[in-house]
Length: 496
Image (cartoon, rainbow, N blue to C red; front, side):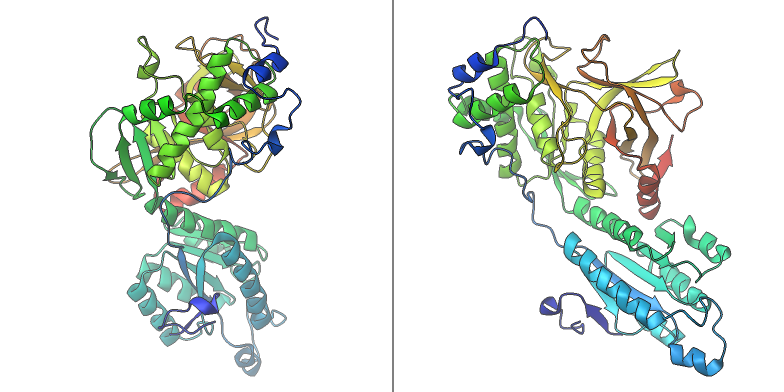
């Protein structure tokens, strides 16, 4: 069995190549930082590299996909004089060529390695050879594309024999509903029956890439508990403990940091209002970004979490890291509050699957309006995506500690959302999953609780008080079905 690579120059030997009253005066604030009140912050040399977004963390191998089309040569059908579905006008060879060109683009954009059988699987012998190749090489995923109804058993045989996560694409008019139903809810399979839907294929391959990345990723946990590195069951993500003293010591080194002054000036310029924080509070908040970023880089990490609340009590051990968390998330680096491992893993999955930052928060409900309420003292500002404009935010004190500087991000009313929480389980993990719409983001908050807050609908619950979980993560967009597809492919139980 020969497979064709989409990168001929990297072919393995065994393959063919193929206005609060306490608002600060902005000009005085900038002057206090040593920055001109009229400077264009984005062009300042010290600011240009503050929030660069690059690929970071441990080096990662690309996900490898083995693929095959399944159909008989058209000349064989012509000789028989009967085509069955998809019919005599269906150009299987031409469709394969067009799909393959699109797969090359997907491969390049996602950094995958896609290897396709050098000829469509027509006979039982060809399918058996493909199965043996998959068992031998153990790729990260499969891509199977049937172009003939009668060849559907080739697809089911491959999936059953190999046990490899599989994306299956059948364009409309190839299969009947019974065939689709056979695989649509099968664990380990993403079954697509849709007209030439290569966009869905791209998401299916992205799911496989996400799991590969999670297996090769590292989370830094800044906390006082001593523990060796360990791996998360199922996802394979590594967790490394970094003493909180490292955060405190690194913070002290930035006492006269010009970069921190520039970032503090950015906060002052961007924020819609400054309520409680002093100039010193804002500067200290800016320092936390550089401290956290340095630890991430030193440890070659992909995400971090921190035991943060204990250090905010008297005597203060460190300042709230909440502004640093906002900027890290805005760069695509998940940052989990209160060393919540499940929440941090959830944010990592969301970032990898949907390229979206998310909002970890405490949950509550409005029993009279039947609404969900979520709040926390940090949130990404780039909730629409790290390459999109920021949501407006206000600079506030930490709500529970009563000091420091944190962001109150104003979340968009009318925005559809998804809520999730991955729950680590030894045998089989679970994921809490809801969808809804933001009804309100009170500003300034007339509520108690934390600074950034939201009131939302919940589509899945008849009784909002039946909501499960703590520290759920919210991100913009209705991605409930896509997340369910990921859970099905990797055998994660979806619960509400």
